[in-house]
Each structure stands twice: as structure tokens, then as C-alpha cells.
Image (cartoon, rainbow, N blue to C red):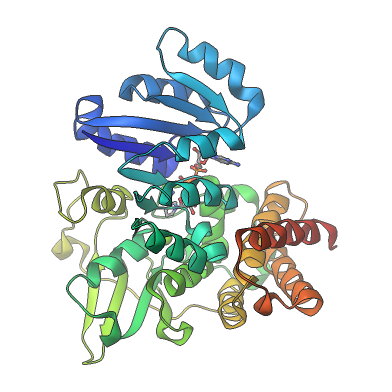
Length: 387
Ligand code: NAD
Ligand code: MG
């Protein structure tokens, strides 16, 4: 039986992953090694019971007693904290979903790769902060990383049987999020509640707000550069409100290969789960005659400065991705706590990047996990300190 683990099983990607595992036979078809979550221990315990997991891990030590209670009598191990997450990642598995949100997903993914696993990577923060390290680690251990972000899964699928050397551009689409057509003045006063609802995709709160600010797309541009190792100038963002075309790959002969599908993450998750084959998936089939029209437009960099920052991050390289991601996470925390406004997020991130570049030269820093963690801490500290 295939051994599988799901990191971040209680989140939006995690729940969709377990839905597919369950539909494919659950505990009868898969040996589930580890499931991990945060404060939602009741959901975590019920998932672990349903799939007969070996171990359930909550990220938070103070949630351990509740998790133990919820698993009482099941024979499933309960564990908590960062070290327990690493220990779970060190348990050999054939397929591991990396769907913790934020930089916290980096270390477990790293450890998982050392066992030559297939890592289905939803945690885009890993590639933005540590792309070259992560890919090198995978190569060293004969591990495989499969993209789970819908755009990157679409690009990956567009490249099957193709030579990346013949690609001249990669276009990723953006729905435009909750505020696609909002003028700057209105954006300034956008509330957390308004930013937390997405027109097309049902996702976790943090990535939904990142979609409204286009920080999610900015992260995805960097993610594209890191995963596919293409030059920044080859990557384009195209606003596409229907979210049906996920990405397009353009070749040197002018051909554009587009990937279309319903906005349902089970497609990208299922592709990574069934890869290199395809299997039936419970996603809606598109009726293009009924849909009729697809719309595209260029993104507005004035209203969505995050996209401009992504270009700077790629041009700088080195630790710029780690600083960018951490500053973005801190700015998002401040916005959710209603301490800064919607547009202040990009302004805050830009100031952190400028300050850190001036002080320590982000682009020249050596690439190491320690350096990434130190950059992450410093960027968060600065983002909170600047006023
Ligand atoms: P979510 O907030 O719904 O779930 C996050 C998961 O991580 C939960 O299980 C939570 O308990 C766990 N978690 C949170 N903080 C943690 C910490 N400090 N340590 C350990 N675990 C922690 O998030 P999501 O929307 O499922 O997104 C997960 C990842 O997938 C993110 O990196 C996101 O960018 C990426 N992603 C999500 C979608 C989507 O449709 N939701 C699409 C593409 C990529
Ligand atoms: Mg995406």
C-alpha cells in the first residue's frame, strides 16, 4: 500500500486532499502515516480516526491534551510542536502533501525530501523563500517535487512531453481577487471582511486576502521562476476574472498551450496524487458553450504594487524571497489585526525590502537554511517595528 502523509490536513488544501484519499478508498487503499493541523484538534482527530493514521500532530504544544483526549482509545499517537512536525516528516512515506500555510511549512518539507519522497507542494512559501535549496535537496535524495498551486500544476501539465528550452514565455492568470475593479481610494479603506471573500475560489483566509492584494500572484510569479528555472522576463501575469484558464505556456514557434478547468483545487491535488497517470476526479466539467466568453486584461501595477515588488525580489535574488515572504506574512498579520490598512501592506513590505537591502545586501547573502530563517525573523521584526 502507498504510504501517505498530509501536512496541514485541517486546512483548505488538506481537507480537499483527504477528500480525494477517501474517495480513492481511504484506509483500505492508503497507509496514512501522519496528519497535522493547528488548533482545530477535533477535526484533526476525526480525520486521523477516519483514515487510521499512525500519528496526528498539532503545531501547538498547548493543544496536545485536547488532541490526546480526542484520540483516546484509538491507538493513534498524538504529538505536538515543531519538533513533532519534523519527526512526522522524517517518517518515510511515498507521497507527502505539504499544505501548511506560511514559512512554517518549509522545515517539514525539507525533511520529507531527505527520504526520497514525492512531495506535493502546495506551500508556495517554500519555493519563494528557499527555491534553489529545496530543488537541490530533492535532487540530492532522488525526491520529486510536484506543484499543487493551480497555475503551476497547469504549467507543469502544459510542459509534459515538451522541452523547457523551447519555452519563450509562461503566463499565469489572476482572477483579480475581491477588489479587481476597486479604485485606489476605495482600496485604501478595504476591510478584513471584504478582503476575506474570493469571487471564484474557496480557500483559507490568508491566501484569500493575499489574492485581493495580489500578493498571492506576486508569490506565484516568484514560485514560477524558482520551480521552472525560467528567467523573470519570461513570466507574465494576465487578469482573467473567470478563473477557468489557469496558465498558458508559450513556445518559440508562437504556440500557446492553455490549461482550463473548473476552479477546484482537487484538480491540481489529484493530478499530483495520481501523477504520472491521470485518474477520474470529482471536479465539474466545463460547458464552454454555456460559458460563452472568457475575459482577459493586463494587471494594474498602481493598484496592485505587490506585482511590481515580485519583479524586484526576482532581480535581487538571494535572501530577497525570504525577506519578501516574511514581511508579507507580518504585514498580513497586522492587517488582519486591523493595525494597518489594506494598501499599507505593500508599502510595509517595500520598506522592509529597501531597509534590509541597504543594511545587509539581500542579494549577496549565501543560500542556507540558517540564513533563510535569520532573514525571516529579521524581516518580521522590521515589519512590526516600522510605523
Ligand atoms: P489554511 O489556512 O486553510 O490551512 C493551513 C493548514 O496549516 C492548517 O492545517 C493549519 O492548522 C496549519 N497551520 C497553520 N499554521 C501553522 C503553523 N504555524 N505550523 C504548523 N501548521 C500550521 O491554508 P490553505 O488555504 O489550505 O493553504 C495551505 C497552503 O497551500 C498555503 O501555502 C497556500 O498558499 C497554498 N495554496 C492554497 C490554495 C487553496 O486553494 N487553498 C491554493 C494554492 C496554494
Ligand atoms: Mg494559485
